[in-house]
Length: 269
Image (tube, rainbow, N blue to C red; front, side, top):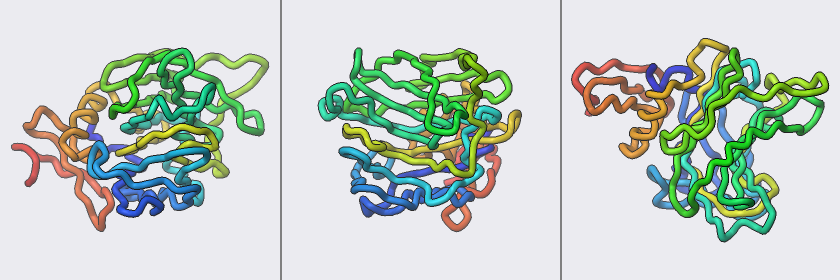
């Protein structure tokens, strides 16, 4: 599939001001318009500029729910981003939050037991309650690394790819005691940042694909590779690399991703 199919939000994080809204470069209005603390602009980032979150509760958050980016248990979705963290800046015993969609989905990193990236699925128990999907994936600090989290709303298959290498592929655990996973709510908001924890990390090129089951929200393996390669080409989320031959190019209308142009002989220059 084209990387533009089912793309729900794309945050280039290229704003020149460190406290500016993280604008959604896609057609949806999923801007991260609430700024807490002082996220700072970093130049260069991985692609263009990036955003650095340093200290406790420094983040950018949606001002209101955007249904297109709901990451519920009954939907297909993919969350991808580049992240670079400073292992020496993480307080002892603290697990740091990089991305959260309130009670639906959470990405953390820490140096407890080794540099590790983990993700959690929200449980629908009337408040923040999480099922840890512990990948035990060891990752390096102070270097840009690409993470792709994939979920299938029909099979409940959870996957994590780091720099195109799959490090986790398993069905979400069955919950005990009649508990259920969160199917998404209008009360939830998407946030990037430290979320009341400590640490320092930089994020760049955050993308979310989401749809009803079977709608293309879950990227396939080839998409993950294309996405990783397109980042190096400064066309993250917009161009399927395709080995430099044919492929698809997303058309931008008014600064927003609109549709896809098929290209027979290469990229339109």
